[in-house]
Image (cartoon, rainbow, N blue to C red; front, side, top):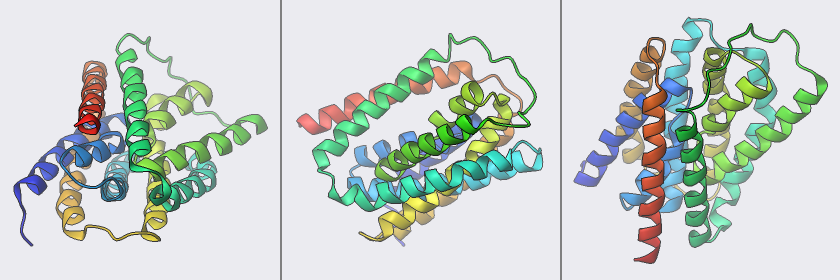
Length: 257
């Protein structure tokens, strides 16, 4: 297997992304897809590869949270049906979307997520409480609808969805931040797997690219999850928001070129 310069760049950036994003309970899919697109890979190949990398990162980082008993399995399994169905549908339908429309969706997504991450720098810390013993019926219904929507976006764009799942679990379901971050890795693994299956129905995957970047995110996700237990990541998170904005600008330039 020959590794060219473009693939080497993908490996290096994949490691860095997995390392940093796993500290926030996210798989890094918010950046994997646009990064691969900017490196010259097709949109479908970028999104499907991103889903595989999300699955690897989430399983790797999730294992660290599992060992520290920081995953709420009951709530994660409540998310599973809706987010899996949504991700599968997004993966299947991704081939039907016009390339230009998908690129615009990426731009809007990156701007929105970037703003959310930058805002977190000034956001007051969540008062940590005990994990909820019981969730209301209304919250269950909201999780189903929310999960399906996030899953569809995940399957369509190859994103993990952790950037939405963690705040939802913290501010709506009232989970401690660490539990929400750990649980999001398990939830993302469901959406990533379903999205991969959806994409597999319509096109082939680049196995050499997946292999080399997969090893990079496996190592990066594991290291990032370990460090997340020890550091305050607000400034890094805001910096990543600015990077997402830069990616959005780069995609706009690519579209106009």
